[in-house]
Length: 407
Image (cartoon, rainbow, N blue to C red; front, side, top):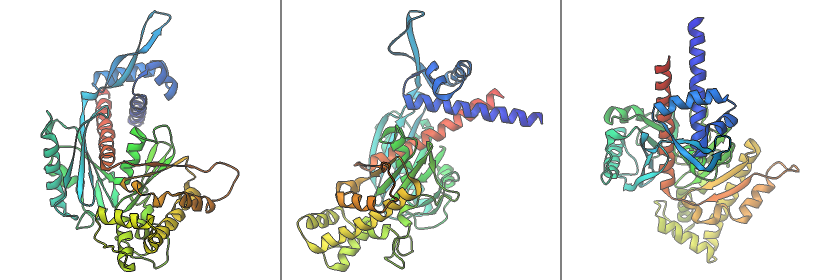
């Protein structure tokens, strides 16, 4: 019974440390009294926890911006994350290349790079070799080495068991059921944190982007595939098997078009890059299922110029996508939906008629619908999300060590 009480107290203390450091990271700079107000902890508890975090080197004191303690006539002291306490890397593996972002613990980017993949699909050992090469190449022009990094975040498309770092299936890999984290950690001396790339976009939006002031929002990504990241009460929702939020593989047509996952009728099989090019090839509109950016751009230009075949391809994609968005609203009723990714340079998935079709397909009540915002960015945002995931994991490891030393 005594050990149970110690364990419970230790868990509560660890949770308290997590809440305090999260409040500091979110605010960027914050006074202790404001941490107490936000977390509901007593000022004495906040002082005790922040002292531990200061001693561990995770945070530091800075002069609060132009505010003075009127009772004592001296500047207030604020707390912030200590940027040089840890350095992390984030890698996003895309269809033809990988993007790497190196960041300090404060979330500031130190270096970035884009490196071509040797092949669109890699085996487990090939992926490990590529990741090591990508890291070494990106670190080359910095004062850092792999040994000076505290963690690596990796985002890949597919179905991922994030707690285990286990890849059930990914279009980037030649095999199924790959213990990718274990393979990487056996070769590279770093804690590795792996997740579905769309979840990491949601993490990036939460820390650095449009989701920063929301506790409940959904990110939909459209690239070579279709992904979704769900944030509920400030936490990424993954499902019990890592299969949650597979928006691209929700079914919109019984026995419909073939999806790259092997099933038929998936939303992705109608709106993803490869699906559009396949449709163009079938309809004789100059397409080719082997995607190139120029081909997709040309198809879009043709549609804008009045080509009826190209217009029909984008119209069907938009209609299917509106159906999918309506399902998201009806199931989750989020505060905000963010449509993200490189493909936002083309408006066929967020044109006014697509959003109007979505609105007509949701449950109608006398209350405002969720906001739909567009965030156009490239692969660096995905890599930043992977780095943010690593930052979160490194924080948990550091706090566990504080808790262990305090027992």
